[in-house]
Image (cartoon, rainbow, N blue to C red; front, side, top):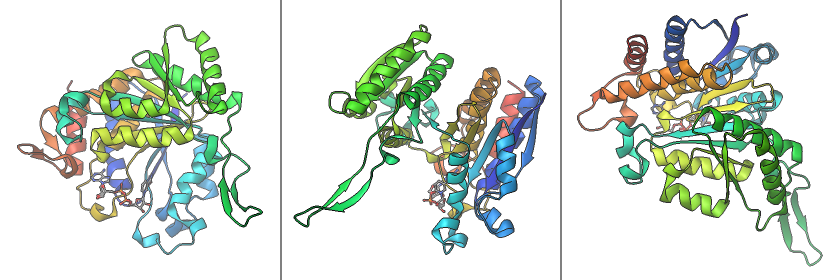
Length: 360
Ligand code: NAD
């Protein structure tokens, strides 16, 4: 039976970069004989314009019935006066919560050809390829009780609750072990178990889960050390797994090591391995409609989709190699341009990836 992708381009540069990813998908289908069907829907501002809401019931139903979702980006000044509950970004948040996308996968990949773009020395980051697996629906961001209360002496006190159930840790650990198995076979679990009981339990559960993954080498690191190691010697990591808050901070730090927001894909998965795949960047209204956007994060999101939701690792590897080959030929969109490069537009960049994929 064909696999179903729901394509949600969204706003701003979303439709432009999605068009290039779909060209690459067609090329991958041709080269690898993939049986994939694509349906289309509106989300974000585009959905507000047509349905008055950022995510219609019909689109949500399409999302539930798809095997994976390829998402562009949402938002823009046109919808800035919408009430908070009806902002374009709500469409994205609603999809994450309705589909219970608890596992956020954020690779920080630095193609050697772009090493100069990083704020770290090129030799420290050239070829960097880390995957951060962040728990997305639990931990201190969602724990109860939470709030601000007034003490007897009149002073106000803010409080949040850092809480994880064993089952929540087990399911994110499983995603991380599976991902490590498909990559370099090494997993580093990040916690603060010397201070926080909740992450002591986290560590216990991760160790217990490792029994089913003898082929994955498990290590542990305190979060403060992990932050330091990420900027000292980031290439030591393969896959890192951590809770919601630590993952939020570490994944942004790792992303910055690559220095190029137009290059970073991400995935959010649920227990059925259904996933939503999207670039890390936003809808870039400042360059929307100008054929200037870098489509590579969207194309790399498609590669992740094929690898993690469809088990098509060979096709995913080939797309990533085509991206690397295109960079090797010197093609650059404006955001990653450097001296001596060949400056190309969105469409030309997509064409170049297709060409490399079909003529590898
Ligand atoms: P942004 O990521 O859209 O843009 C930041 C800067 O990076 C801009 O200068 C933009 O031109 C550039 N840029 C981003 N992606 C690029 C690409 N692929 N190629 C070339 N240049 C690129 O962030 P922002 O300006 O803070 O937000 C713009 C809109 O996007 C807002 O409405 C915001 O809410 C929304 N947003 C959406 C998402 C999402 O859909 N996941 C994420 C972040 C921001």
